Length: 370
Image (cartoon, rainbow, N blue to C red):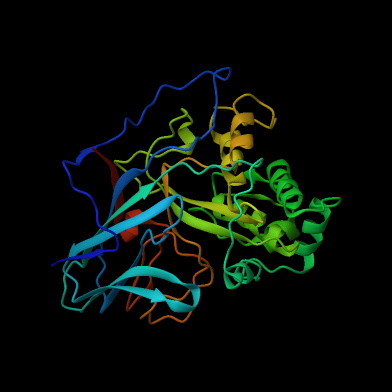
């Protein structure tokens, strides 16, 4: 069975597929730079294939799709194949997030679903000296100021945010202070499963500010919201190597199964939604070199710390910005803190989305060039 949904016409005038080299030349510390510039659009095709071996009753699958249309991303189309009895794009309407849903009756011996999405991205940059004069729907800004289950805005979150922004008057100053506070006080913890859970209260109360992107950028977002600055997480996937030679800021298109990555945005009047990623600064500090770099002015770190305040590279696609969402059609009633991985369930319960080897899913990508 094959189905296709087209949201915007995909040009096919002689397009040919080419995979970027996975091992770019690594520059020396003295040569390092990270400075995304305005550029043209890149087109990526990403395929997620799920195979369920442990069949117990009805099987249900939910796969995230790149569902953002922004100045830096265009979702083109989605197609799927498999042996499901029902496949459709569904939504958790209150959260505004869409996903692909598939249902397999008990008689299917090996439920299989392959989703292919095509999306265009480009580098995202900001000129702090030239306000863009953009406006946002007030309802969207209100949503980006609300607490979530794992990001409450009172108690220690509010206390920490006020301490981090002491003396800051403008939203820009607050965001700058919080970004610097996260980079200075948190750290990347490679042993955390997946991308983390984003439980910022536990992190702040225990003083253990180690985590991965969904933890570290959640701290940034929560602190921004606690002092009245709209902010949100953007959940997505790295799809290609970094053009700047940073191995930790890119991915191997042949195997994107563990390439999920959460970024962040803050809304600053005059500039609109601005790219942020303190988690990737901390990843470079911890994992880019054999030794943990603890100096934020180190020549390997400094370009990334400066660049990821307001910019990010277009080698990543965004799925959605939703928190506390429900899986439509699920037999379970528990919400998900976010949707960044394939999810599934059968009569035995919810699958472990952080275990692609036992859940058996694989993500691959390629860049389509003219």
